Length: 202
Image (cartoon, rainbow, N blue to C red; front, side, top):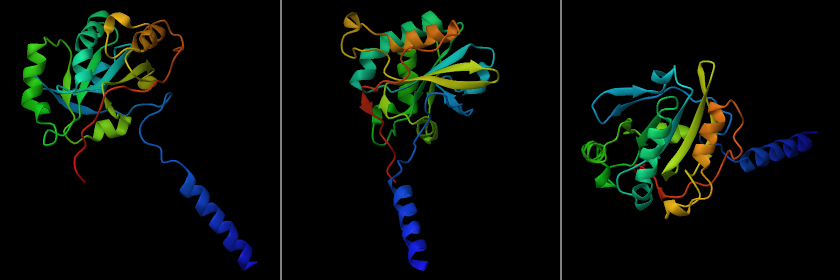
């Protein structure tokens, strides 16, 4: 009897140990509110967008070559959807590892590129961890459902990081269009292509 109980206990331990640890949001999850400092010095929260159809959250930075390649496309997304589906950019790199991504550099970057949307500093990196963001850029399309924001797409902005003119699949645009038309996104998850987020040393 004792031996049987030990075998069961060992099996349960193995099953638990083998189970993957879930990190970040998945499609269908409700996103918790967050509040971060914008480059204009004001605090911006997800809950500020209670009257929007949804929010496009993109984790990005100043320095990554992929981020630079997508800069104009991100600005275009804001111009196209901003009135109904605001774009929020979040910078989570640790400036001590990536000096070009300090808050001061973010302020200059936003001004020089004419950002008309929030560029938020995730200094503690808690927001990136909550989302499960790994790269720059890494997009999360959030649809407003009642009073909640739910994830309907996670991943790349489109299918060609290097050449905007060669894009054939616009994942983020398709997901936002679907949300605005109260339809399900055709593609809900892709692999984010870009530099890895520079995490603080433990």
